[in-house]
Length: 565
Image 1 (cartoon, one colour):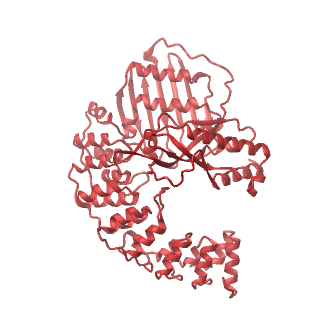
Image 2: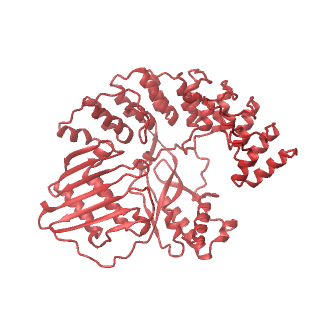
Image 3: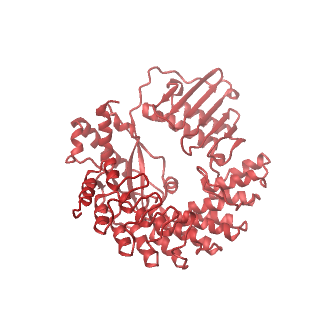
């Protein structure tokens, strides 16, 4: 990729992170619930559309793969507002684009608005009543499909017993599910689960001949035998999807490695999803109402340690009815603390609590969970900001005054969640793992992208409840050190006694960790020492120069020269 292309991508990224506009309805102040990604997917009617355009004049646009949009959905499930980042011709960076590229970018944004307005959802509910919902999602963008060079007719089927259809999905640098599913003409389904699936190992089920015929028809509609054998994008750490079909003596296989970025027809992705859906693979990969019946046919031992692990996985990935069925089948609900590892939150109860699935929690609680396990689950629900799950667990015997419950609630960044826990009068300065407090965790945790997050209000609530800003964790980090961006939070902490020259064990001070000019100025005005050094001997000025923060560096240089900030 040449230097101009890199610049084009950079400019486009700036547009996608700049001024927000609204489409059709100015509705930013409308009250609405904020469903999570799974809830959005469950309420979507149909499938998420893909914007396909000819990016011949600006191919870098297609490499981003998606346009982020914020939707406001009314009580009837109709989208009434679409917000996304728009092109600003007055932006200095826009001048780096050609006129044709600007036209193409505007066309893409207009198409994203139109596509967003066309989405339909089943009504979202709060306590059984339809409500408006506001959430962020992504609309995929793809370059126009490649033209088929040579059409190869789909083979006629003479012997249905010869049919074999295979889909395999590999892992990735992350938590991509890895598994293989094989479907035969007689309806036999063979599954082999690898990593990040609810059920691992080899399992067997069956589907009807009509369903096999439907699956073959999807291959036919995709014009499968006319397509290329491989669609491979030049990237790393992504999953590989492989499909294949054998009919009599004919066979064809397609490898998809982020193929949509190199002109792979959308029909291939739809085919992959159709194999999943028609084979019923979700009974093993996530867990649903078909999970227990399939395991019963295999005479699976529901009292085995493997069954308890499956229950925990299903609680993390699957449906509440699968959890309910597994408990009813006699699976032992393990409450032993789980060593955290990639992709696994913990026990079945903790996973259900983190998702906030009340129905799932009720099914698990029938198994007679001990209070300590309920309290650990409450910590997960608090951190995830799942209020209904929190109330259910507290009502069932979880201890809301345990230190990590308030610390988790503060980590959610949601004022209502913090206030809910404070109703039980916990010690607001109690320490959790690593010596952290609720106040420190509020500012140091990764918060969900949720409109209910208000860190300044959480800090205010905690301070009003008696939180001490001078307390440091085991690494010497205070709340003021943890706050690297927010000017108002820093003002609040300083007004209540936070030490502007507090030093963490590695020598980092609030000034050294300040990420903005405004915060740097505030700290200097309150006596922060510009000569303080880390254990490596670096000052805030050294950091600012290394990060090429010129305005910050100039301010620090003036302070070190004895000038007022």
